[in-house]
Amino acid sequence: METGTIERFASAGNFASYARCVDSQRMSNGKKKGEGNTKNGNPYLSWAFMEAANFAMRFSTEAKRFYERKKAKSNPILARKALAHKLARACFHMLKEQKPFDVSRCFA
Image (cartoon, rainbow, N blue to C red; front, side, top):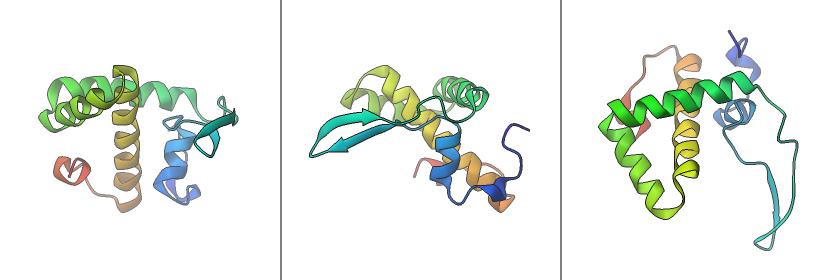
């Protein structure tokens, strides 16, 4: 309901950006030069994908393994956001191709 038609998004990255699952930074030579419009997108989708990430960490061994791998390299909040981003991309492909969720395809 919150996304409207999925055809309005050109790619999975555009959908993830609309769902506020990506960072909005301008980088130059490895240095942060500013931020874009961080309030752009749908806050309800952001909340929903973070909740989905929390449940996926609890009930899916593949999601838990992905989260633990990301958490070892960065902090737990960024790892949880990375899992939400992965779920947003999977949701885009599910809606676009009209296929059910496939754990092995998502976390392969």
